[in-house]
Image 1 (tube, rainbow, N blue to C red):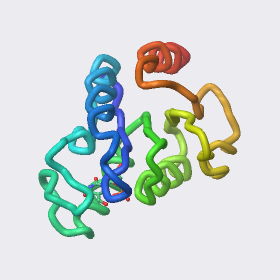
Image 2 (cartoon, helix red, strand yellow):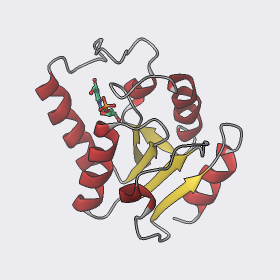
Image 3 (cartoon, rainbow, N blue to C red):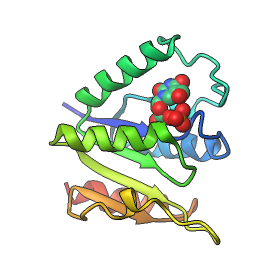
Image 4 (cartoon, rainbow, N blue to C red):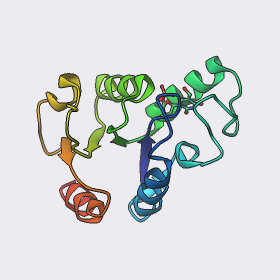
Length: 146
Ligand SMILES: O=c1[nH]c(=O)n([C@H]2C[C@H](O)[C@@H](COP(=O)(O)O)O2)cc1CO
């Protein structure tokens, strides 16, 4: 069976990076099935326009926890801070058995949360600094280490 990839990106935390999310999701499709393509949908706004099957916040939460249970790999773009993304990463790690790649674009005057940067690194849990032009190599390195 192909890899089941849960992609996380900010929605209500701000949609500044939605185009990059689209490029990441397109690249991730080469490595497996992306369960959360709606995160990269430019029609989904921070004020909550509907993104498919779930309409209420409870439905969104329950569907996403179910998808987290189904996935074997979590890839999170963590540059734009998002409560939901932080929750998904923590909950996914607590489930155990999932590989996790957090992607961060360093910027002046900002620091990534210690609760993400401080994750104990391993082959299966990585927090990587990257740029919008360099993610292909980062993804290739992460998935080839599986
Ligand atoms: O409408 C939604 N649909 C949805 O799937 N999410 C999930 C997936 C994203 O990786 C993450 C974004 O969280 P937040 O909205 O707090 O930035 O939460 C979050 C929302 C809105 O909070």
